[in-house]
Length: 177
Image 1 (tube, helix red, strand yellow):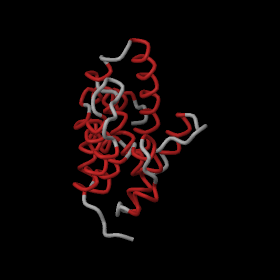
Image 2: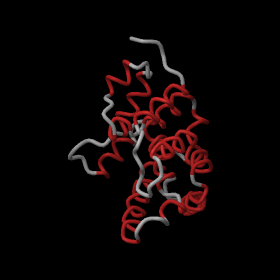
Image 3: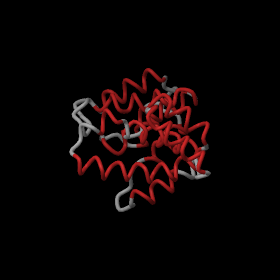
């Protein structure tokens, strides 16, 4: 096995892997994974790396084994694998599975928060915006309860502060945070 890779090297790997890709609103995809990673910075380099790589297995030709061979720590690769879509597995089942793994839960909370940003969703067609809003809200029900309010607040304060009101409402209503 090769030496451990640095955060800067993981960023370069993610940038190269996602080169030419754009998100749903036409922004270079690397901006999304970097925003997710920034929201995970308070939790350590392993989660920053997982944030940078969270879509690399799903959306590029990279495999988990190739990431390990490149020096990405096993803990990071396992987290990326945990958040990667699996063919035939419904989104709701995936989210419940993710919620069993703390690192994966935090990555998915940051991913969900970035995908839910009002400035991003406003650029989508109304039907897609409504469908995704419901999907992401349902995921937050599961993910936020699994992580706890402090971790959720830490991430969303960085990635999407507009969700802080939703978090407060959940806390005040006694709903799982």
